[in-house]
Every structure is written in structure tokens, then in C-alpha cells.
Length: 96
Image (cartoon, rainbow, N blue to C red; front, side, top):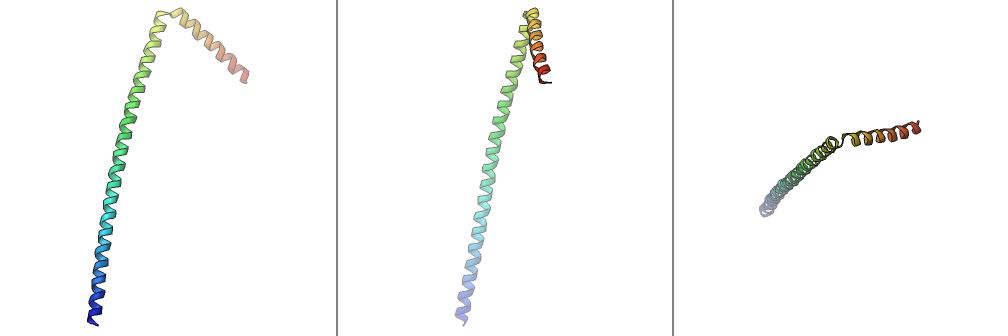
């Protein structure tokens, strides 16, 4: 009977050790997943920031180019703006 009791105790201890190893492995897997996700988020953040800055520079360059054109061709610019306004006004008037 004591041999049966000892065998059951050994199995119980072995099961506890296995459970702890599985828990440790799961915790390590969770840490690895969290670290990988953090890295992906960091790369995405950097990429988005770079693209935003590139877009901002393109908008500033386009604005400067338009401002330069208007300064060099003021009469032509006013005529183009007037024509665009007339077309837009006619389009909006039709919709009503």
C-alpha cells in the first residue's frame, strides 16, 4: 500500500512539475509575442511618421510653387481663378 501511495505522490509531483514547465513556456511565449508586436508597432510608427513628413514637405513645395506662379503671373492667375469660380458656380446652381 505504501508503494502505491509513493507512486501516486511521484506522479502528482511530476504532474505539478509539468504544469509549471507549461506555464513557464506559455509566459515566455507571451513575452515573445508582446516583444514582436511592440517591434512591429514601432516600425509602423516610424514608417507613418516618415511618410507624414514626406507628404508635409510635398504640400509645402506645392504651395510655394503655386505662390511663385501667382507672383509671376498675377493677371493670368486672377483670370484662371475667375473662370474656375464661374464654372463651379454654374455647376452648383444646376444642382439646386
